[in-house]
Length: 218
Ligand code: TMP
Ligand code: MG
Image (cartoon, rainbow, N blue to C red; front, top):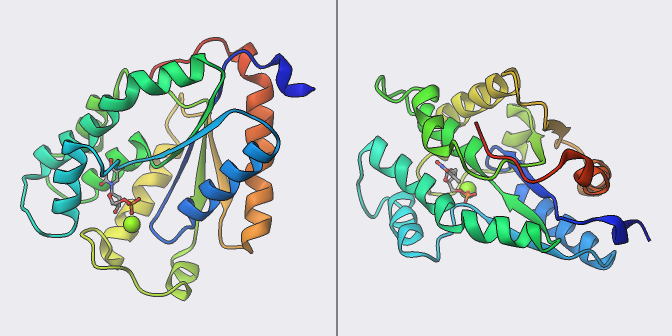
């Protein structure tokens, strides 16, 4: 069987705006891979269960205040605290699906418009984290997003913030060395989107040995 050849797992990240359907699609992808007998893990950021994650959760709910730089570094620390376990899982042949990662980390903070917090600055704490083999960006138009109903009550869930986040996400796609990013039109029926996600993921898992060992974000 094809997956007998896979020596390491693949690191697959799913990114996008709020309401793009990331969590539903990660769940579907996770189930599909398990059904196909692939060893698979599904994690998400922020991981609100750790002490750092609890501080992030409180900030997002508006229950505590933090400076833009401080909360930014907490989001990054929240990834660093599981970086080793991601690497260990990948080495064991487990494919790790990640709901949001460094790309969200950089663009949400930079979208706040703080003149001392550029996209370049925001990216620096991510340097050295495990680099995804594949990043699926679930793209949704502002019109389609609006049809999906209102935002929740968390910080950042406003039209103006989401618009800036979208523009910054798109600017990331243009950067050199970001060839592992694949844009998926997420404004379509769930099953169609799921199929469009599964194909590149299986392809990536098949080719992961030729990519070599897991790389680091630069
Ligand atoms: P969630 O909706 O996926 O739980 O994410 C919560 C919010 O946190 C969402 O608005 C995006 C934001 N975020 C950051 O600002 N920085 C990060 O590093 C991550 C992972 C999420
Ligand atoms: Mg959200």
